[in-house]
Length: 176
Image (tube, rainbow, N blue to C red; front, side):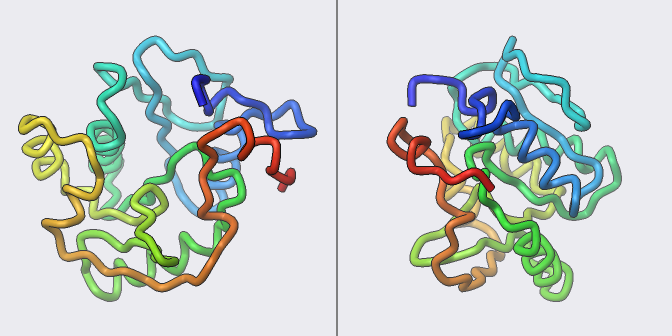
């Protein structure tokens, strides 16, 4: 979009995407961590804000940073979400987490015709796997999931898994 999605306001609201998502995730997850770009300014949120070391490296190193924080907090699993999912249904987190616990999978990914790596539950101990991939120059979540015990959960078409990638997407958004 050419602009920081986290600080965009939801249509018809003064709340930003990050404020909305932190509140939504806080209904199911504790603690909540937000990974920000180096120097990125965010509004005050009831979450621990972590800053990526280098900008523009993609979601894989940011996920590693968040999972390290989850390990420190004592969490065995963590729900990883992109900030551009303002219609995310918190009930999906419960479904994915239950499968992660019952199957002992490394990752549980919702699938609606495609994998949603940035709306999935990951084992928090995957940091060494992520570090190795990042050191090899990898940035994509797909590279991580390809080498793991991954469970894909068919969720059907859910508006909540649609992310915003353009100004047109934002204009079409209905306030949740």
